Amino acid sequence: MRWFTWIALLAILLLLVSCFMPWVFIASRNLVVSGLRSEGTNYGKPGYFHFLMAVFYLAFTFIQRIWAKRFNLLVAGLNIAWALRNFILLSTCQMGECPERRAGLYLALFSSAAMLVAAVFPDMPLKKKEERPV
Image 1 (cartoon, helix red, strand yellow):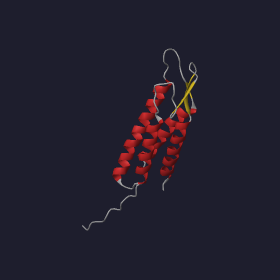
Image 2 (tube, helix red, strand yellow):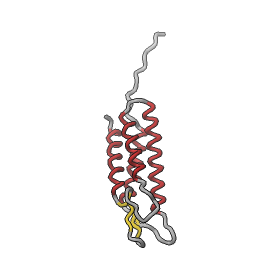
Image 3 (tube, helix red, strand yellow):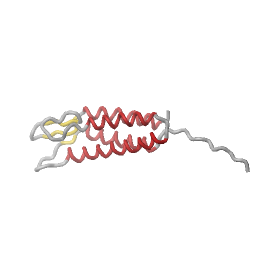
């Protein structure tokens, strides 16, 4: 395996860990929001979509076909878009109150970007060209 495959595996692991970590703290309601725990808000559970994307990303990383590598780019793009959406939605100031960003939110964004970088450089063996007689 090339080292981009190891970066992809590490990024998946970091993404899954970040979903269990606190993402933001809302001081007025004394709420800690994470990827899987958001009681008292209307944010839902955005970590489950990251889990789904991580499963597809992992599968497409180890399939040695060109279509899998292309789908892996799509999955990584959707994942980073979801991470950016969560970063903007959860950390936006509303009605004069700004939530305090925690490490899990940054880690989810960073690991999604690492997944995209690893998907851009897939581990595909190159075919040798056959020499044609002149």
